[in-house]
Image (cartoon, rainbow, N blue to C red; front, side, top):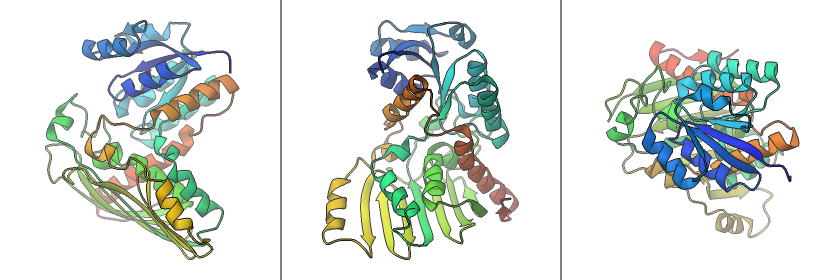
Length: 346
């Protein structure tokens, strides 16, 4: 790929990671960044002294050198900004969640189809080295019939984290708390690894340790159309920030991981020494995001994916309709908790 694409980022919270990845890429030039906070624009200048800075998104979109825009504004504004960028002739990479409602997220898919621009979504945990391994064991049938899964995001966030910016932990802009913001990545991994459409969701939520509008704890039982079931817990109250447990069990094997660290690998057909070799190989950096929200790992992979998708004229790895699945599950959790009833999917 000899041609380089022009890259821009709007929203320099987690978006700063996008800017760093684009600046490091051999196939892109970081052209511009946009944010309302001057301090964040200054940090982007430290990454790339030549980057153009904007406080007006519409003005940035007029720059003809920009081919791709990372959308990293508050979650409830993702569709608005992504649609505007695509209508301006820019490809987009949208931070998780794709938006906070299915209806809003569908606007991104509609714009993608109408404009012909590329639209990818950030679910970078699929790029963790152990995740394709676990997924392959399911879809290849090596694990046998998937019986149940156990997923738990046991993280910690301070009150200051929620107060910063004024949008986290609000229904309007965050769309939820520990589940929609932190654990949506693991919701995506759950539906991907269980390899089945969801049938129903039964949930409870609570606010245990923060002054927020939404929640800092959820517990759910999720049934799949395959007959499998999964439990799912999310929290930002587990001091000091513990683990992301990803566990899938089948008739012929069992797999467990803490984020990108493989902790169990047992199969009926395993050759001698396979488990020891796998656990030694996939040691990962599991606890980072549980402890510190600034340690957002894996953005290099998703940024490189959207860049190569544009250069190669192919779809990004995760399209809006795939990302919508996790939003639908999250919203079903909240609906079940509000109504006290099981939510059934079509």
